[in-house]
Length: 161
Image (cartoon, rainbow, N blue to C red):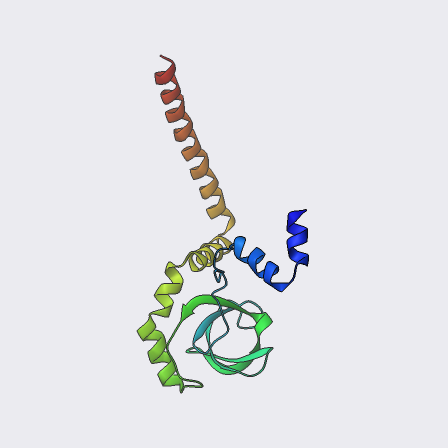
């Protein structure tokens, strides 16, 4: 009741009320912004799976992207997945300058060391397996599970004894 009355006593009381309930400072959680030099992964189309760099923003829906092994093209943001990697480049650099900046920033190694990059590498490797390779993996998993089961049984036996 007193809270309700203090709000109705005017703007001064509201200010006092707001100061009594202190909130922690807001923390920015989102860190992947569309910016020049942002490395992105193409998630759709003929360039699916390639790493590209945003070299210019055309409008709110499209960006000009480039990579060492492809032509510079406009691409919709829906077809790009932004990564955490950002390189230092000027707006619309020449191809040679872009390649040098990517090598300097070590983009390829950073991508391969990231959990996202490792996951995609594993997915590609699994997709390229033939039937016999999958069979060998299944046998290895069964063998590993047997060894783990034996060790667990030994430990349980030691604890109960």
